[in-house]
Image (tube, rainbow, N blue to C red; front, top):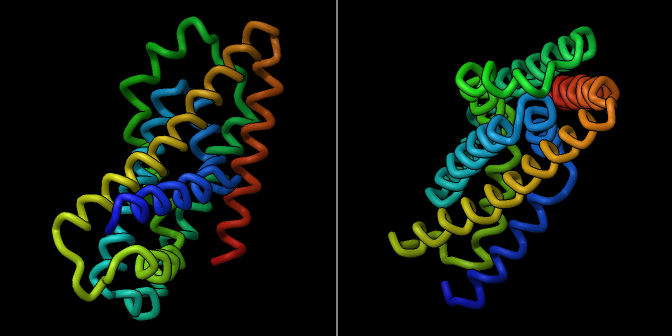
Length: 206
């Protein structure tokens, strides 16, 4: 993979990661309601899921999507139901006090955010096909070497992780502004609605 190809791949993955999607909704929701660190934790889970699919694609296992399709349908449904459950809880609960919430949730919700990110990504079995069709334009999968794999992993972490982390930071800032303007309840209801809608879409698409 040449430097130009690496830069091009990075640009493509940044653009795709920035598109509005269920993963963006999850990151923003966790960040807006529980702080930027939770949004970043969800982003880490999303990146890990992407790296899993990339490993399958580079190994030439795109047929894995068909062989284990039912398993990923179950994962997608479970992930969708989780988002619906979390969204409903947001719609029903009172807005948290921004001055105390950060100390209460920092140690208890990071694993939940991370797990949600992983499950949401693994529910998208089509990602295997996507990566299997994307990477041949930049690297010969049949002769891929360790250096090329390391480059792709680094590009994925920087592009997907960087974009999702930016969404997390922006989500937290919007939430902080809303708190200062007494709009936290409105933001929480909007976030809950987005999560419920995203969860329903995932279940329906499964």
